[in-house]
Length: 219
Ligand code: DCP
Image 1 (tube, rainbow, N blue to C red):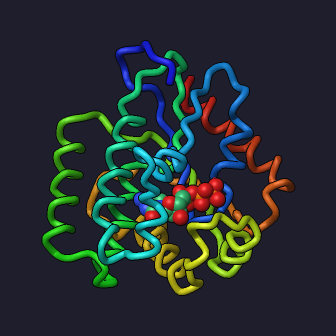
Image 2 (image 1 turned 30 degrees about the vertical axis):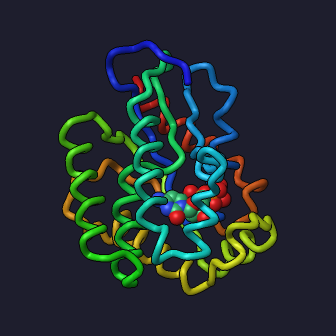
Image 3 (image 1 turned 90 degrees about the vertical axis):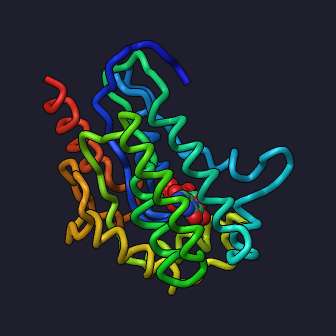
């Protein structure tokens, strides 16, 4: 990751369900000189000193969800706080979606124990208090769970073989609560909603719109 500026750059979180096209969307911005693109480090979760924690989490969620979400928090904090020389940082997901979507869902589905949930949420509160991990804009790739379920099956990431449509519906609902119904009591930056049901290859116009919005917010 490149480093420099002392001030937090204009920070954009790209959010949406599994398979909603966050990485494709972000790859559009890769070649912009003013934008630092931080992809989610899934590869780091697949190999922690030889341990595939993503796989362990999906195979035995009761046992491994806490370790997995702790690892996600750690890697996300690294990305939030990485200094960059560019005036804009675009991130794939955030500490906030980890907390309000994934950790929340594991707890509500009784996969994560109350004690584990309390530890993770209190870490989260500390990070919010002690680091500048805020975003300035959220781009929400909004999709139907059925659409992303098919995309996920087609891409065939081995660890996700056991991810059900039911699970994607839960993750969708929590994104909707957080970003559309705004039921979470926490500062929320402006949210730009994109329809991510269409094939992402056909969404160039939408990408361009986001580019204009980001640059207009910068000036
Ligand atoms: N994941 C999780 N908890 C988190 C973050 C991610 O369980 N706090 C899981 C869900 C996926 C995998 O990690 O199985 C990667 O998730 P993403 O949806 O963030 O990334 P994708 O590659 O699926 O995104 P896209 O297809 O939109 O590019």
